[in-house]
Image (cartoon, rainbow, N blue to C red):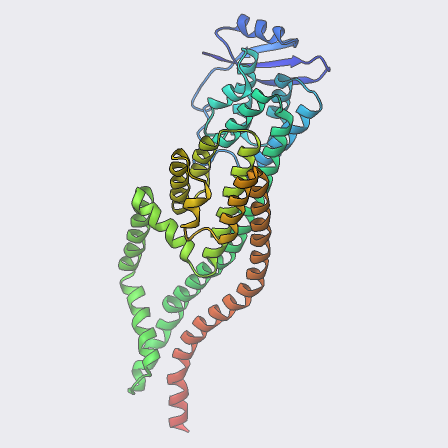
Length: 402
């Protein structure tokens, strides 16, 4: 069906603009008027290559989705009609993909669909967790509370993700700078001393021979080095796309010294926070586990969650399979077991999420204070070795001359 750009005025006097899907222009005007909106203009959007949006990867940044959830909850609590609230959110968001999706959701709402049904048509924009909780909120009549829980969930999830990113970004940047500095020294500085060392007609120190050999290899056989890097990258991408390969990569991530623990705690925080939010919104537990399995972001942890789902189907407690999993500390399984016994599973999961979110926060702050001096020493050590390899033969020559 064709799309139309509308300009309407709501009952509260607000001017709203957006996109609307209808069979024809007259149908679009009629549907807008049925919702109590004063139609100021409706124009058909002619699709061209220039007006077609193309998105790669995750279309909506997490911060934009956090703001959307918080604003949506505020508008619903203020009693703003759903259609008008969606139109307002479509105008205010800075995310183009989210703006387009909300415009189409508003048109679906005008046609009589619920928000969850309309959002279901935009799965790349609205995650399964969001759709399931909204549907549950619509059925229970507690959409305001559900939106508040969603806003809190995405805010906390965003904070944890950003903390982990900040812990990983600094060493990666310093590592890349170290590699660049070493390549520059080996290819731009060391070759200038080769002729001088040849003229010494003396035995060079082992470290100097190694540095000269590496410099010559990078200068004359750069294509081998470049090809090796490309092969490794391509192999990694192929490995990541396969089921077994992605599992091994995620397993390796959790086993990385220091950083593996941070990622493990972050994944546990996300798992427990997601499950707590879904359980509190009365989403069926098996459906909740299926959603958590898809959003936790680690194949190893997803595998154990899948085992827990199978265990529940057989009538066993959720905590039993998790107790056998090395990725879940005793605190997690004990709290889940207590929650199952007392009937307060959502509360216990929320406490576990709070604990691990705070733990990730504190761990990242400690890592930042420790990693910075260590990386500086590491970078200085590598560059110092290259400089020493150049200077040692010169010191030997001067001492012999003296």
